[in-house]
Image 1 (cartoon, helix red, strand yellow):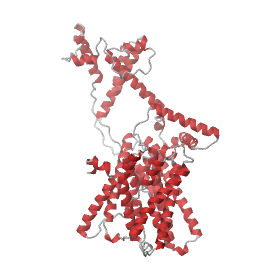
Image 2 (cartoon, rainbow, N blue to C red):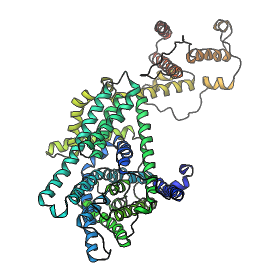
Image 3 (tube, rainbow, N blue to C red):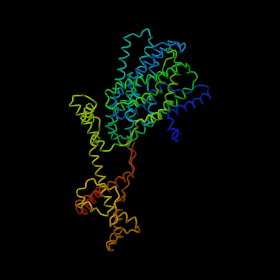
Image 4 (cartoon, rainbow, N blue to C red):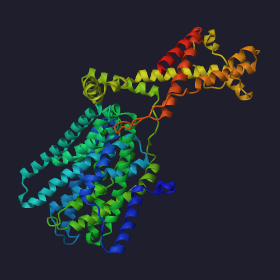
Length: 620
């Protein structure tokens, strides 16, 4: 219903509309039963709703952009999240000490725990809003990459502070803090390695599914989900595992699986991610309609909103100032404003706060209420105003178009030149590392993880050359058809012509084109060639001859029908597709043959007879 009116969705993000709808539905349920029957539970969120969204983000991640900006993304995700968590928690604790918030049954560790869960920029919310805004690629990848990786950082920080709260403030020593820092790196790197291992396993499996095409898409989803569950089982970062599983497997899996399977994977993944996103935002609205979870403290809630916004801005400005010393493409002030404003909180924060143990964290309800207000404020208010802000600041937008061949060639040349310069100067940079990795991938990884036929078809220059040849041939034949003869190809004026552009209309010659004659002088057509021979040659006869050849060339000869056997492992191709393909190939072959013979001045009737005989033999 939202999508029917573009006037609404242009102004209001879908995520905000879904939250409002959730509140409305929650109100109806509450009015009917006076009990909150439905709520977004952490188990459902982390095991069923989050994995499809993160897998979709990883599998369709633009790898070149992501790894090119990985340093910036990691700085914002790791240092930025720790900064936001620590400053928000400590500031709230400092204000609490002044007595403005009244009496709260809580300590410093509880505030730091709350700071860690409210610091996360949520990928679900960021994706939902930023995809509608269409900011430029670099800005999008930095904000989105940060939100994806900082989820993992937040969950690790949350677990560390929760364990501190469990053992009690008096038992937290220096050794415990060191253990917390070490566990942070172990959990993050361990999760990433689990994801990479499962990505290579999935690529290897997809190499051998040639005869079971029907279950190829199943492997993509099952093995990716296995990476998530395995990381969770080993107490590692499951979000990082499934993200890197998607990022690392996409190249090999897309090359190995068939076109139909690739389409199935693409649409199923998008459908599951979209469905999960809809459920999350709607249940955020429904979960809020429950008086039992609300504890209001105006000072605490307002100060939380102020602190997360202010420290986000300070963090982005300081980190960008450091990064711009090392980045080739500088992040401008406008980009920093959008990044600061794009720090949307979402379902991850709500799921983590719902996980809190009410016996250990006495003020759990206050934390839950504050988190709901923060999520609603960032998704609805910031989501509504970010589009006008981007337009007002004239932020560079992204261009959705396929790069031209010239751009591709120059881009490739620049890559080689830059990696060569880095190699000569002895500097190990992005280009040098990318060049080494692509060589290693070509020599070893692709040979192990890619089917042999897929490796051959990766030769892009041959593909482009083949396409250009086809275009040239079609344009020559079309021009010949317009002139009524292909003799122009042999004329001395065109001997030195290369890549002639026949797309522009030219004044018609004295001899009208065949198609023009057929169009203008339509009449009963004689298909009896013997009768034609006996009649005098006129325009009408020429017309009939052309009609005869056209029908002979384009009509599909009926084949003997075979009954298809039922197979669970294979999808049978429809006869229409096969027929269209055969007609196209036959037509193009004949066109190219006539083109060659005309160009070289060879009488091709004997050659065509040979081809017809060969075709008949093959068909028998």
